[in-house]
Length: 189
Length: 189
Image 1 (spheres, rainbow over the protein chains, first blue to last red):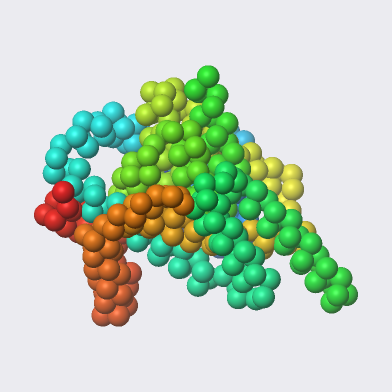
Image 2 (tube, helix red, strand yellow; image 1 turned 60 degrees about the vertical axis):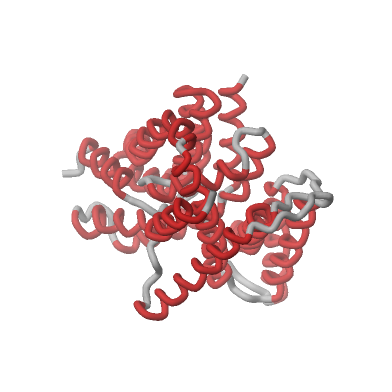
């Protein structure tokens, strides 16, 4: 039975036990709703991932909202989104109360000095992975190079320029480029 | 008013962040540094905490920063802000604009954003690396080489490459964080 309570509890469980963000969560959501409960079909799930990838915001929120809506309408979307965010919110709020005191301990502070290096590495490897997945056409490589150089230059010369502008400008360029591409090919779509 | 400010800043982050957890890091970094909410080091600490606790990274970070600036209400305001855009957009797509992500202009816009996101995350790593390894933030800063941090970074690169070669799998980020923490306790100080 597709009850709202089950929906809520399942997303609560997913929110409480997924480490490593969006894609780890997708596997769990598929396991619960496609394989086990069969509330969502395979095709619809693939469709949902396509939507989640082309909309902003955390993947977990995107998929909870979508599946919640499909199962129980607006109220279902609200419940699922609340459930998937609640565990993180609770854990982190508690951690935040102790962070300063914890960090003041000498050996903890030394541990974090090492961990900070690790995080730079983790972000770099996320970047490298995304670079690997990026389609390597002239348009993408040109945009990537220009944004990268400008971003580092602005930062080094202490010029304030929000990354939001980079994202929006590149979005508009993509729209224009792929739009004209379509006209050239006499396209459809 | 701090609650409104937290809400609006995280609303903006939630509305323009594509590409999942680490795709948001460059925007989050800009916002927290510009508002003086966290230092670069605290942000790195916190990304490690977010990576080692369950739940979406964006929710983790919003909750933490919200709490440090405005207690439980601050946490709620920031988290609500970062979640709201995804929730509304997905609801609209699920309920009304069913095939919006299949329209050519929308696809073009998303395609244009992809290289920008890769450039921003790579640029952010470079800027963070310059700061963590060379003590260099902007032109005019004296360079202070942090040999221990550079050495640890090199060890992490070698370790993860060898692990991948031998086992064919990626080493878990949490394992790398723990390892770096232990190295930090022993050697950093």
